[in-house]
Length: 176
Length: 245
Image (tube, rainbow over all chains, first blue to last red; front, side):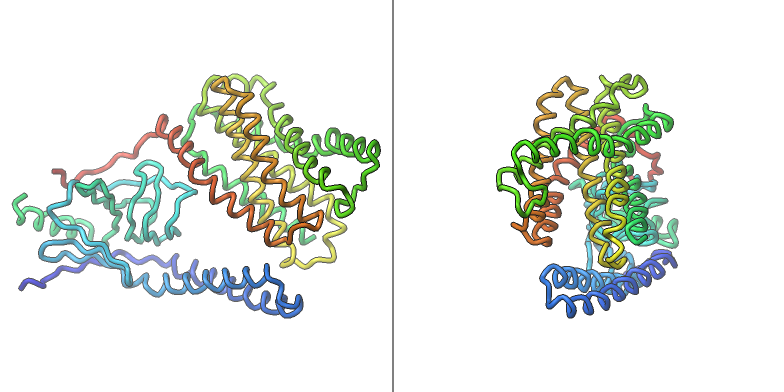
């Protein structure tokens, strides 16, 4: 039974689907216009750069919304898996120092993908510094897992209390 | 009309830049912030009409230099950004004469924030000053073609906020002159590529690329300063602990 795992999903929000649809539609529209302008301007280099940047942004947006529903947290035998599409973080139970729930403070200058209802990758928050997010909430009621190497992970499981209870069971089972 | 729409977009996005300095200081009330931004809005038109324009008019007439940069000597193309930097950075100090702003002079967090607000106000004033100056000229361009104006103005407004916050920070720690010279240097560096573009030495995308690269270079150290100042006044939200080792 070594591969037994308990899977928790976050509560998916409607907002990322709407926001991504708007972003993808708008960038696709701009791409079409740019193609016309590039033709008219005899392949001006600046416009070609803009076109490439827009296409990359369009593809990234599409990719991120495709992987959004795959976000999940897996409690396995020895580790907690945080998964979203091809992105994965593994936290060994023995490395967990603290589990808490808090509201985070937004920072405009941060990197990462952060829109209402979708927070992914390393995101800088004013109060907690860098937090690796696998969450369908950006700021409110985030479960923070702190590890012994001072890394922070942000989660938002749908069945929050069940997730915490199961995680605590795993931590106790390890007798740490 | 398209340039007005882009100006409105840039202004709204510029105001969102205030989120950068959120939580740095809680002493400054909303009234002071609104007053600071309103006063700063007038700085750009004032410096352009009453200071820069007469200076350039004098230089061009005295030395018989063409006001078309494409026909101007190379040295003049370098002098322009220096004059622009000195005059603009000097006028940005002007709001300090108001007691409502000056009373924070010895508080570095507050003064840094107020400096950012002054720079932002200056930048927004510049958006509208340029928009009204180019309103006739811009009519031949489509909304899409003017997107460069919108994004370039947003970058410029951020850079004004960046430079003025450093300047005010310097004043608050009694190193005003050092920071003033540093800010003038930075401002000159930023303004050189657009001047070269207008003179026909650089293509537009190279100018734009320079500004983007410059932003990438400064954002990290600037963020460090903001983080340092914020740590002094930040309150951390309460947390509910489920497990602690």
